[in-house]
Amino acid sequence: MCGIVGYIGKREAAPILLNGLKRLEYRGYDSAGIAVVNGEMQVLKRKGSVSNLEEFMSGTVMIGATAGIAHTRWATHGSPSDRNAHPHMNVSGDIALIHNGIVENYTSLKKDLIGQGYAFTSETDSEVLVHLIDRIWKADPSLDLEGAVRQALRHVEGAYGLCIVSSREPDKIVVARKGSPLVIGIGEGEYFIASDAAPIVEHTNKVVYLSDGEMAVVTRNNYTVKTIENVEQEKRITELDFSLEKIEKGGYEHFMLKEIFEQPEVMRDVMRGRVRLDEGRIQLGGIEDYLDRLKQAKRIVICACGTSWHAGLIGEYLIEEFARIPVEVDYASEFRYRNPIVTSDDVVIVISQSGETADTLAALRLAKEKGAMVMGICNVVGSTIARETLCGMYTHAGPEVGVASTKAFTAQVIVLFMLAMALSKGRTISHDEIRLYLRDLADVPDKVARILEQNDAIKEIAAEFKDAKNALYLGRGFNFPVALEGALKLKEISYIHAEGYPAAEMKHGPIALIDEDMPVFFIATRDNTYTKIISNIEEVRSRKGRVIAIASEGDSEIGRLAEHVIYIPQASGPVMPLLTVIPMQLLAYHIATLRGCNVDRPRNLAKSVTVE
Image (cartoon, rainbow, N blue to C red; front, side, top):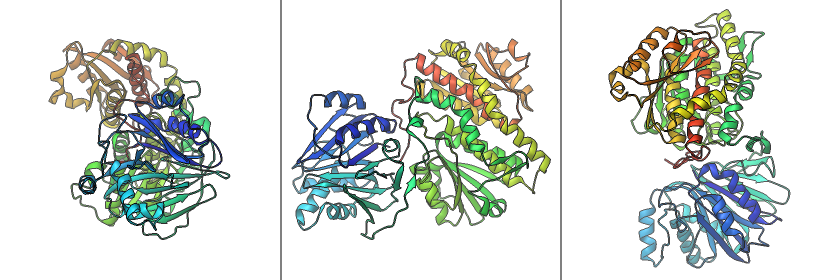
């Protein structure tokens, strides 16, 4: 969840580390800190954003150091404060450590260390690690830093992404990974370490991803990767498929707005080479060799969290509608704790933008243990989900920096749509039907571009509801998950309480909340549930609720019922979620910005949830 960056080479380390933190701040912004080695250790850290650290650093001397580590924190153990910020140091000040993850047995380790005279200056679980390394190294001076870290990790339960430096061995950085991602960037006479590729891409496009249970020792001249058990590993070098331009705002005020507007292009990228309109078929190279097994599944279980879970719900509707295979959608965070019934006849699909979501990885591993075929859908090439699943598909959405997911959601839905088509071919729907649905899907990017042209009008609607305390989002059929996603977006970035429901369920409780101050967002496009939705709108109007409708172009009836209508192009029901979600994203964005909220860095949230 936190952001880790390290550098060792020929250049000044501090500016590279500070810039890296800025690129990683979406992973955590409770506090930030930096440590460089230049004869002795220099450590600076500050509560709050990276800009606070940058301001604090001006006027201090970190000149001449060509190796160091830095961290931006999302708090787990210990409140945001200067003293809880990373890096953490040992008592003598010659070891500095940064950590992403949770040390589950930190209480017993801390008690043991205190009993041996160690004093703790923070409330974090992470500080235990630096003192543990220190104790082991002092007890056996024949060890080097690598050896001390290796021995320490044998006592640790939990998850970690670690970077450690020491002024005793100033020409190396030791890193280790278990459950929390780390990547090494390979430059010319220099190396970069980070939680993800964002701070690396401006320096090199060649990276190595560490796997769970691996350590690396990085010097100015090379790197070696071994397991915690000290077995050397051969690692494949991956070339990054995105540029620095992709992680810049490109003239937009916020990353979130940029990523909303990128969706037509992203949608085309997701379909490129996969949707063969001329042939009326889908070509999915990542699962082609496994399609027969997928089609024979007795059941498909989709595991995901947050926005990816909502995409999974749409996937359930799509696969059951077209392929007629039973589908269940599980919260990954619950899957592993409820002793699920999973067999070798099942297929488990895990969905994660980052490919590193801790709960989703745990679900993946449990499904494999139970003998299921596990398939992955993720955005990040080389991520853990991509490496540990039998097969899968990349979404090709490009880097998503805004914490509230937008383009990743629509990319996931398109991938699931294509999967449903591929599973249906030759089984449940005709070739001509597939061709029609693919034509409808291929038209979506242009239709989304037309919806985005209404941005200014949607902002005006948002202005009327920026002071709302609560909101309801209602939809039916394929659009019910979009109602959930719309409510989540509003909650995430504007801090307005919102709930999504199937529209008919309003009568079973939520209708009690409706009054003249309650905005109710209806997805009321023309499909087989349209007349029912109109009835639901009438029920809200009779209780003085304020109705905002997402409706199909040409619908003259809806205008007399809703206070505001956002018209979108018509499409078939299965592709409609790709259109209806766009106004939801824009409404949430504008309501949040009008309230003065930081939409790219909403409070208490981080982009990639790599701790349970």
